[in-house]
Every structure is written in C-alpha cells, then in structure tokens.
Length: 544
Image (cartoon, rainbow, N blue to C red; front, side, top):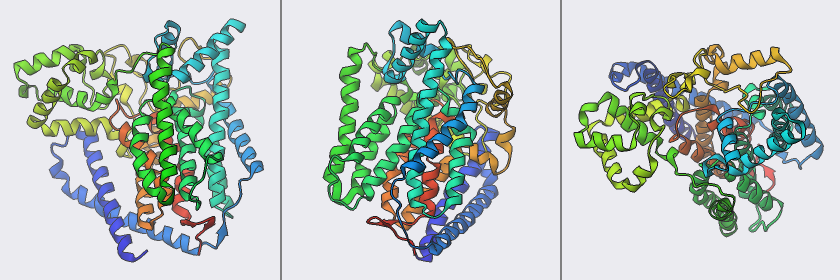
C-alpha cells in the first residue's frame, strides 16, 4: 500500500478521533455543545495528535506485517481447543463462587416475576428466560433452594460462553501461526480479564448474545474466505444457521443489525452470492417464523418497541426542560398525553429510562404522524438541543475517558437509585436479585469485584482504563475497519459488518452500559488478528 493511502486513512481517523475526544471532553464538563467554539485550539490539537498517532500505528503495523515469514494456516486442533476451553472455564470458577449463585441481575427479578405470571414479552428474549425460569423452578421443587437453580444455569452458561471463546481462539491461533506469546496473552485475556470473567457468570441476555455473535463473526469470515464457489450445506453452513438463529433469539435488537448486514455480507461474498443470500436470509426467516408463530403459541406478548424511540424521547424531554418556550400550548398538551409529567421533570441526560418510564406507547402509535410532526417541529426550533440530547445519551460509547454512571445520574425518581446511590459508577451490576440470595463463598474476591464494578479509580488510570472503556473498544473497532479498508482485506472486513451495525443500532438505545457493547470485548482476539495478519489467497496466508 502506497504512502499516500496511509496518509489519507490517518487523516480521516485523526479527524474523527480528535473530534470525538475534544467534543466528548467538553460534553462531560458542560453537558452541551454551547461554548465549544472557545475550545477550537483543543480540537485542533486533538486532531493533530490523532493524525500522528494513527499514522505511526499504521506504519508500525505495516512494518510488522512485512517482517512476517510465509506461513500456512494450521488445521483445527481439538487438543488445543479443549485445553483453552478448560483453562478459561476453570479460571471463571472463583468468580462464580465469589458471586454465588452467580450475578443474577439486570432486571432478572422482574423478568422472573413475569415468567411466573405468564407475561413474558418478545422484548425479554423469551427462549432464554423460559430456560432460566425452568431451571429455577425445577431445582426449587427438588431442593427448596432458589439459589441452586440459578447456580446450575450459570455454570452451564459459563461452559457455553467459554466454549465460544475457545473456538474464537482456535480460529485466531490458526492465523497466528508461530506467535505463541501473543496467543498466550489472548488466552489470559479471556480467562482473567474482569469484564470477560464477570459477565461469564452473569445471567443477562447480552452474555449469550455476544458469545454467539463472536462465533457468527468467525463463521462469516470462513464463508467469505472460502475459495469454493458453493460451500453447500456443510458444517460451516449448518453451524451458522444454528448459532445465528440462537443469537437473534437472545436479543431482540440484534435482528435489525443483522437485516442491515445481509446486503454487505452478500456483496463481499463475490462468487458465492446466491448461496450466501440463501444462507443469510434463511436465518432471518427462522427468526421471523419463531417470533410470529411460535411465540404466540407460548403466550409471549408482542414487543411494543419502546426502546426504538429512546433518542426521540430524550430529545423531546430535553427540549421540554431546557427550551420550554419553543412549545406551543397545543404541543405541550400533546406531550402530556404520552409522557408522564413526573418522567419529563426528571429528565436524565445520559439515560432515557426516566423519560420513557410510563410512556404511553399505544397512544403514540395511534397518532404516530401527529407526534412525528411534533418531533420535527421542535427539532427545527431547537436543533442544538436535539444534538445535545443524542451526544449526551451516547457519550460513554464514543468518549474513551468517560465514566459510566448512568444509574447514579438517574437518581431515585422511580425508586431505582437506591442500589447505586452510595457508589460512583454503574459499570457492572454485581448483584443477586430475588428470588436468589447472595451467598458468597469467597467474600474477599467479591469485595474486589464490587470495587471494580462500583468505584471509578480504575477507570481513571491512564491507558489501563481504556481496556475497560466502551468508548475505547468502539474506537478500536473503527480503527480495525479503517485499516482493513486501507489494506483491501475484504474477507475480514465483511465479517465485521455485523458488529459495526450492531454498535450503530445500540446507539439509539436507552443508555450506554457495558453489556450492550459486550461483543466488542469478546472480539478482542479477532480484532488483534485482523491487524497483525495479512489477507489470504486460498488456504495460504499472504506473509512475505
């Protein structure tokens, strides 16, 4: 790749990173874009640093690749796969014991109550919560202990998730032939890094979704990378059908990113476009069939899709609080028909949970055009307020030095804040909700996990904090995508389309939490592989 291409991609990345860092720093202190003109020098400095840093890193990566020797992709090694799986799983056991019966948190109590009442909605991943509810009920009937059912489920989930990580590592090892130190570091990352291990013992739907998503990325890479014109319904295709279908059933918003990713994935397939189209669309059809026909038979209620409107809700709520004079009397009356007054008055810049609580979705849907016109009308009068609302609600996703404290800022308007009122960050829930009861077998270890989850000191350590940062992980994903475009390595680029679109759709969600972006942490080994290994021809890696 010529020097001009390196300069161009460095300029693009530097401008993006510099703008995000400078704007993010200003938004953190001021909460609005107003006054940003006074920080133009800071913006230019950030862009300059971003351009130089991007150029240096890209130059070093090119130099490292040029020094690599010719290597042939290694075959799948079952012995190494099983060894990695065992190491990761065993390293997670102390975390599970410390949080025994496991981190049963993130709305699990409410969802279990809905399971008992037969009121599960499509929003809450019915398949997963039917399984969790089944385990809790069965083991409670046998032992009279709710914890036992939760504990067994968590262990089984740990086995599945650690298996996904081991599979990812096996694929990466095949491309990192001869780089044993790097492979060992990546193995330790999945075995010991707190974000990975703590979520491994957590029952939120995002864990299995992200684990299946990392496997989907590998399978897509294999499909795009295959020199064959038609793979047929072999092992890769069957695995993709199964894992991708399970993935979409674990988190509802995943289907939107998946549907958007299909045209891009098909485009990158080149000679296999008919097969790829059939395969990718088949997964979509399976999901639609289950949601449309199987869920109703299981008495699963349809999802009203409130989370899709989080950003417009935040924008209207912010305008109502900060620019109330732009509303006419009729528009205020229209707002009061769908918003709860208490919710509006307790607008939280970094989370839509307050504003959307008790939002009357059914009334909105009956008068959708009227409310869309309201949204457009207020946006024309207060455009900066709308931009501020979006930037603040997504701040932690693109500013790497931010501290995730959404639940702390929510306060206790609706009785939620008491769980976080005496701590500094809501990085990880670290709780056991009812019907489970916290019964730590390793209290000293739990104390350290709780410190990481609820206090900010580690999030302020230079460099180290970026390993935990959602914003930094999104920056890494952006850098890898840009580098692959620069190198024209479309097999890897095509496999990352889904994670990129997933991040884009999550930006329109209620708030930024680590669990929503967990797939980026899970893909760390794959992202590293994309940077340090050249593209491929046939079954041979193009090392020089």
